[in-house]
Length: 223
Image 1 (cartoon, rainbow, N blue to C red):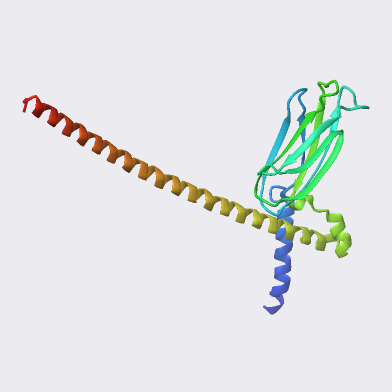
Image 2: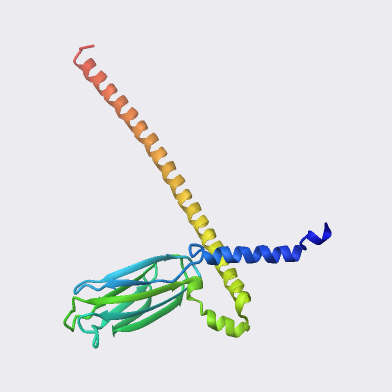
Protein backbone atom coordinates (compact mmCIF):
# COMPACT_ATOMS: atom_id res chain seq x y z
CA UNK A 1 0.00 0.00 0.00
CA UNK A 2 2.77 2.41 0.97
CA UNK A 3 4.72 1.61 -2.20
CA UNK A 4 1.85 2.82 -4.43
CA UNK A 5 1.49 6.17 -2.65
CA UNK A 6 3.06 9.30 -4.16
CA UNK A 7 4.88 11.67 -1.83
CA UNK A 8 3.48 15.20 -1.45
CA UNK A 9 6.51 17.04 -2.97
CA UNK A 10 6.47 14.74 -5.96
CA UNK A 11 2.72 15.17 -6.39
CA UNK A 12 3.09 18.96 -6.31
CA UNK A 13 5.87 18.77 -8.91
CA UNK A 14 3.76 16.56 -11.19
CA UNK A 15 0.71 18.82 -10.89
CA UNK A 16 2.84 21.93 -11.54
CA UNK A 17 4.28 20.33 -14.66
CA UNK A 18 0.79 19.37 -15.89
CA UNK A 19 -0.52 22.90 -15.35
CA UNK A 20 2.49 24.34 -17.14
CA UNK A 21 2.02 22.04 -20.13
CA UNK A 22 -1.69 22.91 -20.31
CA UNK A 23 -1.03 26.63 -20.20
CA UNK A 24 1.86 26.64 -22.66
CA UNK A 25 -0.03 24.29 -24.96
CA UNK A 26 -2.86 26.80 -25.27
CA UNK A 27 -1.85 30.20 -26.62
CA UNK A 28 -5.07 31.74 -25.32
CA UNK A 29 -3.62 31.76 -21.79
CA UNK A 30 -0.27 33.29 -22.73
CA UNK A 31 -0.30 36.82 -24.20
CA UNK A 32 1.53 37.05 -27.51
CA UNK A 33 2.94 40.06 -29.31
CA UNK A 34 1.80 40.39 -32.90
CA UNK A 35 2.71 43.05 -35.43
CA UNK A 36 -0.08 45.06 -37.00
CA UNK A 37 -0.08 46.61 -40.44
CA UNK A 38 -1.29 50.15 -41.05
CA UNK A 39 -1.89 51.84 -44.38
CA UNK A 40 -0.72 55.44 -44.09
CA UNK A 41 -3.06 57.80 -46.01
CA UNK A 42 -1.57 60.36 -48.38
CA UNK A 43 -3.18 63.09 -46.28
CA UNK A 44 -4.24 62.89 -42.69
CA UNK A 45 -3.10 60.79 -39.76
CA UNK A 46 -3.39 57.11 -38.90
CA UNK A 47 -3.69 56.37 -35.18
CA UNK A 48 -3.90 53.27 -33.01
CA UNK A 49 -4.60 53.16 -29.29
CA UNK A 50 -4.36 50.67 -26.47
CA UNK A 51 -5.89 50.80 -23.01
CA UNK A 52 -3.05 50.08 -20.57
CA UNK A 53 -3.01 50.09 -16.81
CA UNK A 54 -0.53 51.93 -14.60
CA UNK A 55 3.13 50.92 -14.18
CA UNK A 56 3.35 48.72 -17.30
CA UNK A 57 6.34 48.53 -19.64
CA UNK A 58 5.56 49.38 -23.29
CA UNK A 59 7.92 48.65 -26.16
CA UNK A 60 7.22 49.11 -29.87
CA UNK A 61 9.15 48.95 -33.13
CA UNK A 62 7.88 50.33 -36.42
CA UNK A 63 9.17 50.52 -39.96
CA UNK A 64 7.81 51.66 -43.32
CA UNK A 65 7.15 49.22 -46.14
CA UNK A 66 6.71 51.02 -49.46
CA UNK A 67 5.62 48.63 -52.21
CA UNK A 68 6.00 51.30 -54.90
CA UNK A 69 9.57 52.18 -53.90
CA UNK A 70 11.05 49.50 -51.63
CA UNK A 71 14.62 50.81 -51.92
CA UNK A 72 13.67 54.32 -50.82
CA UNK A 73 10.46 54.12 -48.75
CA UNK A 74 8.49 57.21 -47.84
CA UNK A 75 9.50 58.94 -44.62
CA UNK A 76 6.92 59.38 -41.89
CA UNK A 77 6.46 61.19 -38.60
CA UNK A 78 5.33 59.52 -35.38
CA UNK A 79 3.92 60.72 -32.08
CA UNK A 80 2.87 58.79 -28.97
CA UNK A 81 0.72 60.47 -26.32
CA UNK A 82 -0.52 59.52 -22.87
CA UNK A 83 -4.20 59.52 -21.80
CA UNK A 84 -3.78 63.14 -20.64
CA UNK A 85 -2.03 64.32 -23.81
CA UNK A 86 1.61 64.24 -22.68
CA UNK A 87 4.13 63.53 -25.45
CA UNK A 88 5.95 60.24 -24.83
CA UNK A 89 7.60 59.89 -28.23
CA UNK A 90 8.02 62.18 -31.24
CA UNK A 91 10.01 61.35 -34.35
CA UNK A 92 10.05 63.06 -37.75
CA UNK A 93 11.29 62.15 -41.23
CA UNK A 94 12.10 58.51 -40.44
CA UNK A 95 11.45 55.10 -41.97
CA UNK A 96 12.34 53.07 -38.87
CA UNK A 97 11.77 53.87 -35.21
CA UNK A 98 11.27 52.57 -31.70
CA UNK A 99 9.65 53.87 -28.54
CA UNK A 100 9.70 52.51 -25.01
CA UNK A 101 8.26 53.81 -21.76
CA UNK A 102 6.67 52.76 -18.50
CA UNK A 103 3.10 53.95 -18.04
CA UNK A 104 2.50 56.39 -15.20
CA UNK A 105 -1.29 56.49 -15.52
CA UNK A 106 -4.02 54.13 -16.65
CA UNK A 107 -5.97 54.85 -19.83
CA UNK A 108 -5.73 54.91 -23.63
CA UNK A 109 -2.23 55.44 -25.03
CA UNK A 110 -2.29 56.59 -28.64
CA UNK A 111 0.32 56.30 -31.40
CA UNK A 112 -0.20 58.40 -34.55
CA UNK A 113 1.68 58.25 -37.86
CA UNK A 114 1.54 60.46 -40.93
CA UNK A 115 3.46 61.08 -44.15
CA UNK A 116 5.73 64.08 -44.38
CA UNK A 117 4.27 66.94 -46.40
CA UNK A 118 7.54 67.73 -48.22
CA UNK A 119 7.54 64.57 -50.32
CA UNK A 120 5.39 62.92 -52.95
CA UNK A 121 3.00 60.51 -51.21
CA UNK A 122 2.96 56.89 -52.31
CA UNK A 123 -0.21 54.83 -52.60
CA UNK A 124 1.56 51.70 -51.33
CA UNK A 125 2.95 53.09 -48.07
CA UNK A 126 2.41 50.60 -45.26
CA UNK A 127 3.63 50.66 -41.69
CA UNK A 128 4.50 47.59 -39.64
CA UNK A 129 3.98 48.22 -35.92
CA UNK A 130 5.13 45.65 -33.34
CA UNK A 131 3.49 46.88 -30.12
CA UNK A 132 4.36 44.91 -26.96
CA UNK A 133 3.24 45.53 -23.40
CA UNK A 134 3.90 43.91 -20.05
CA UNK A 135 5.60 40.52 -20.14
CA UNK A 136 5.73 40.49 -23.96
CA UNK A 137 8.03 43.53 -23.79
CA UNK A 138 10.45 41.78 -21.43
CA UNK A 139 13.82 40.65 -22.78
CA UNK A 140 13.67 37.00 -21.75
CA UNK A 141 17.08 36.14 -23.20
CA UNK A 142 18.70 38.72 -20.93
CA UNK A 143 16.74 37.36 -17.96
CA UNK A 144 17.92 33.82 -18.70
CA UNK A 145 21.55 34.91 -19.01
CA UNK A 146 21.44 37.13 -15.93
CA UNK A 147 19.83 34.53 -13.66
CA UNK A 148 21.62 31.61 -15.36
CA UNK A 149 18.48 29.56 -15.85
CA UNK A 150 17.30 27.48 -18.80
CA UNK A 151 14.96 24.70 -19.80
CA UNK A 152 11.98 23.95 -17.58
CA UNK A 153 13.23 26.32 -14.88
CA UNK A 154 13.23 29.19 -17.37
CA UNK A 155 9.76 28.26 -18.64
CA UNK A 156 8.42 28.15 -15.08
CA UNK A 157 10.01 31.54 -14.39
CA UNK A 158 8.28 32.99 -17.42
CA UNK A 159 5.01 31.30 -16.48
CA UNK A 160 5.24 32.99 -13.07
CA UNK A 161 5.40 36.38 -14.79
CA UNK A 162 2.42 35.38 -16.97
CA UNK A 163 0.34 34.44 -13.93
CA UNK A 164 1.31 37.68 -12.18
CA UNK A 165 0.37 39.70 -15.27
CA UNK A 166 -3.01 37.96 -15.46
CA UNK A 167 -3.58 38.62 -11.75
CA UNK A 168 -2.66 42.30 -12.12
CA UNK A 169 -4.98 42.63 -15.10
CA UNK A 170 -7.86 41.05 -13.16
CA UNK A 171 -7.24 43.45 -10.26
CA UNK A 172 -7.25 46.37 -12.71
CA UNK A 173 -10.50 45.19 -14.31
CA UNK A 174 -12.03 44.79 -10.86
CA UNK A 175 -11.10 48.36 -9.95
CA UNK A 176 -12.53 49.61 -13.26
CA UNK A 177 -15.74 47.70 -12.58
CA UNK A 178 -15.96 49.32 -9.13
CA UNK A 179 -15.43 52.77 -10.67
CA UNK A 180 -18.10 52.15 -13.31
CA UNK A 181 -20.52 50.88 -10.67
CA UNK A 182 -19.92 54.01 -8.58
CA UNK A 183 -20.55 56.24 -11.60
CA UNK A 184 -23.71 54.27 -12.45
CA UNK A 185 -25.04 54.56 -8.90
CA UNK A 186 -24.28 58.29 -8.83
CA UNK A 187 -26.06 58.76 -12.17
CA UNK A 188 -29.09 56.80 -10.96
CA UNK A 189 -29.21 58.92 -7.80
CA UNK A 190 -29.09 62.14 -9.80
CA UNK A 191 -31.79 60.92 -12.18
CA UNK A 192 -34.01 60.01 -9.21
CA UNK A 193 -33.56 63.45 -7.64
CA UNK A 194 -34.21 65.12 -11.00
CA UNK A 195 -37.44 63.12 -11.36
CA UNK A 196 -38.56 64.14 -7.86
CA UNK A 197 -37.75 67.79 -8.60
CA UNK A 198 -39.65 67.61 -11.91
CA UNK A 199 -42.73 66.17 -10.20
CA UNK A 200 -42.49 68.82 -7.46
CA UNK A 201 -42.23 71.63 -10.01
CA UNK A 202 -45.24 70.25 -11.92
CA UNK A 203 -47.30 70.15 -8.70
CA UNK A 204 -46.30 73.72 -7.76
CA UNK A 205 -47.08 75.02 -11.26
CA UNK A 206 -50.46 73.25 -11.25
CA UNK A 207 -51.30 74.73 -7.83
CA UNK A 208 -50.36 78.24 -9.02
CA UNK A 209 -52.48 77.84 -12.14
CA UNK A 210 -55.43 76.66 -10.05
CA UNK A 211 -55.01 79.58 -7.64
CA UNK A 212 -54.78 82.06 -10.54
CA UNK A 213 -57.90 80.66 -12.22
CA UNK A 214 -59.81 80.74 -8.93
CA UNK A 215 -58.96 84.44 -8.43
CA UNK A 216 -59.87 85.18 -12.04
CA UNK A 217 -63.27 83.51 -11.80
CA UNK A 218 -64.00 85.20 -8.45
CA UNK A 219 -63.09 88.56 -9.97
CA UNK A 220 -65.45 87.93 -12.87
CA UNK A 221 -68.05 86.70 -10.38
CA UNK A 222 -68.31 83.43 -12.20
CA UNK A 223 -68.06 81.51 -8.96
